[in-house]
Length: 431
Image 1 (cartoon, helix red, strand yellow):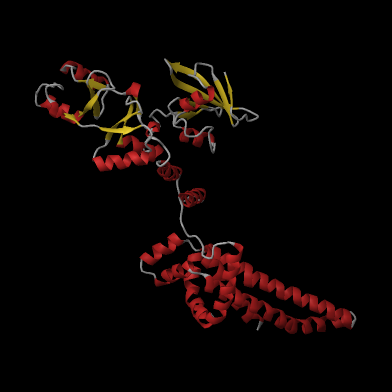
Image 2 (cartoon, rainbow, N blue to C red):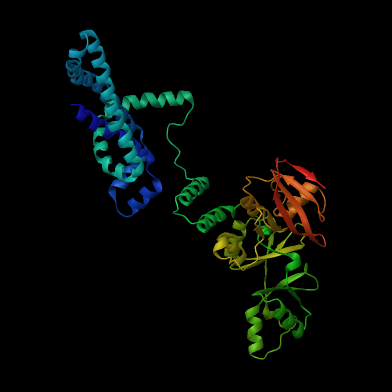
């Protein structure tokens, strides 16, 4: 009888924990592959009230029976062993204690710890194995379960708590799964970084991935063929901006492939007299996120855009390749390519002023920067903290890190040295 009770209790323990621990994504995958048991588990997870009520009925009933049967089954045997060495009253009391201890130990190990450990190791497989018998028991005990479940729902409403579980999967859940996979060695470093970068598309602005104004190579409509050829040779790109006179008077853009075809055919290149070369350019505001500019690329069937600020001044250009490079990260950047933030042997970092803040946060292990939303780059962070244009040797300390401007090109922050300091100092700029 004790063995039967332990087996039954183990059944209910495994049924309860396996259902709670089963991953919906894995079950959905198995159900899509045609496994009807996975579909049954998913259906039970949607409305687990009766299921868990039956589990609790079984567990509590078995616990009461175990106490009754255990005392009657083992106490007389322990008493018979102890009577030759002690008085009858002491033998009875000690026999009862030993019987209680043995039955409790067997139930704790065999009916609770071992089944739950097995269920945690393979929750989906165990849940799919036990879901059939549990559904049968749920149907048999449905009247009792309905009454107990209704009473539980009433108490939950009185307490102001939700009656049904919220199974919504958020991006935080996906990131947590990726982190768990990374720690388990299933997800590689670069793959985890790609997953994080994808979710950052909704928060990163286009300025974090654009080619800034001063680095744009563009043509003027009046540039002659010699100047166009020279500029292409010195700064090879797939696309070039075309302007009327200065960079803020954008006319369109020209594809390098079209220029090369003209050269191969021996035809002259004249931007003003040959408007067919110039294509209409997509103009986007500088406050768009990378996800939003991806949508604009798709709608306009373009992969090149000019970024302007609220005064209609050009602040940069961005391509589809720039966005994808931000997503792919180290999967597309080789060691030979220049990195915006580099860790040195002494633990410090050397970073470009245009390094996006999310990249700085990731490298330094910081959860946040002060005054979020007011800047997108490391240079912008220094400007906000100093309340002026940074100059060489300017220093800002934040959360135990020291940011020192080591190189300034005109008014642009070129290089910043980042070192660890102790103790951390919050939001304290130092000139």
